Length: 153
Image (cartoon, rainbow, N blue to C red; front, side, top):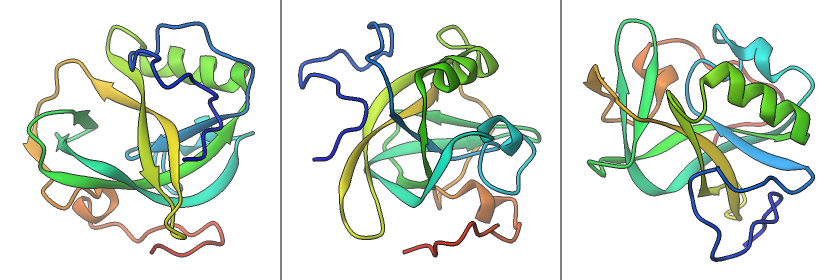
């Protein structure tokens, strides 16, 4: 499995361990995705393409925000993969309220070529709203997907 975060296999999933120097892979599933409200926060990162989580999670959404939770295991989550510097990742941590509101954890994500990548993702400590059964926040909002040059798989 490719791993740009260079975490040891036994690293805790919580994102509280000291960060190795970048690059870091970040999987975004909600408003940080291309074309959505907070995509500007990804400026300076390198877009690597679409992705889907290997494992099933629960994606919730209310009128304003999406929330990812480990349980119940409903669907594989659709999103986008970016490569970030350590400084950029720490800036996103502040934006997302890590670790008190959203908590950054490492999860396996599959790219369109079938490669498994360890990516950081933000889980919410107290998700609410309704479950997005498709696992795709863009589809849930019925928005056209903004392409950055790579197609969904």
